[in-house]
Amino acid sequence: MASTNTASRSGQFGALATVALWCASFALIKHLVDAGLAAPDIALGRYLVAAPGFAFLLWRAGGLPGLRPGEALRILLAVFCGVTVYHLGLNAGERTTASGVAALIVALAPAATLALALAVGLESYAPRRLAGIALAFAGVVVVVVLGSGASFSLDGLRGPLLVLLAPCMFAVYNVLFKPLLARYDLIALTAAGGLVGALLFIPFEDAGALDRFGALDAGDWISLVALGLGATLAGYVTWSIALRGLEPSRAMSYLYCVPPLAVAIGALALGEPVTAWLLLGGALVIGGVALAQRQPARAAVGSPRPCAEAAETRPL
Image (cartoon, rainbow, N blue to C red):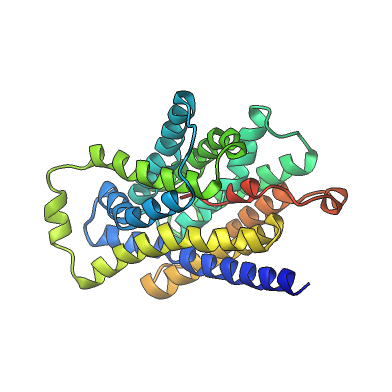
């Protein structure tokens, strides 16, 4: 009993620490975009900062023994979608999108993953799931069209649509990674993805990258290091602690705190407006995701669901 209580307390600590690390990432990205960094600069910078930690985690987890060529190709494609395109879209979109709005759009990721899994036959259809997905997508429409409080225009859609690439690509990432979780450790896969992802950002850089990095002040560098060591590396360590100490469904429930906290941080740190439409849209997104992921009462009596499914709630 004592060991169970200890594991539960460590899981709660891990979940709370993860929320704290991830909720600030959207404001940090917005700050770095406003400081003059391009989308590839931010993505490459944060992953280079995190790379030594990912290398250590991959070594500590024992690597990916027996990796087959087809599995390596699957990892490469998954990482390109869920890391490269995800971060390039999010970073580029935040140039013209408030960090709070971006956080609420990215919160669609679990619903987008479930929708894709249903489409390819990895999950079973249920009215509750379909209703939750529809509600979450409706919430994103409200956030994008009405949430900023500004007059609607097609030009203004470019930023949010770029951000929308993030949850959509992360859905592809989850579906591609799911078969690998039966053979390989989740931490090892995450660490390998982080290392491969860092390399895949390099072709998107241009000759002006060094000048842009050189123009950063101390506060900008602190923000970039915080993204790399905090949201990108430490966040996955604390999330693993949460998954080991809590049932997956309970661990996931903590992540519903990330979008509203990200909106609050954007308002307090960056002066972003918080409108009634933004709050309504955010409530629809979070409520829809919760509804789509909620398990029937009879399923809760059985054994806990695999941690792999809980890992699908958050992008790298």
